Length: 140
Image (cartoon, rainbow, N blue to C red; front, side, top):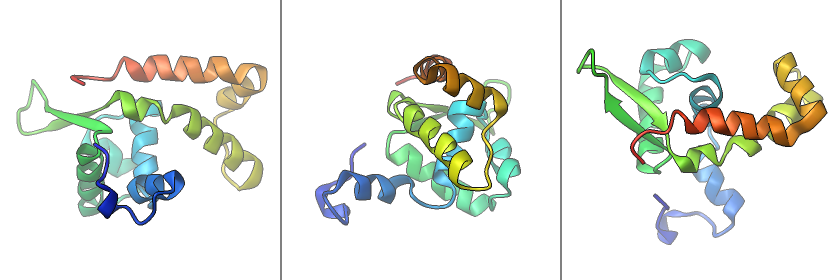
């Protein structure tokens, strides 16, 4: 769901994107959902130590923006699972570039298999990650 122009601080697409996922946690939640396959609240909370109230707010924001959907677990109706939408899957090339940039210019390290795959054929790596993430898209 696109924000109304009056809600944006700028008509610059970079600024508008940062308004949506430019905080400390949102891209990490999307990373875990898209690239790692996490899908439950407890899985997101435990990985990076995000406070549960912050996680709940970020998940709500992603739901409102149309980047994720949530469904009740079939085996436990009190719990939810989260899945990416096609709009979220479109972020994978940018996430790969951020991983590679972060490996080159920060103390962070992308997994060795990502670095090897990106060095030999980055387009194939992105295509493979996108295919896997699209398999997680539900009900969009």
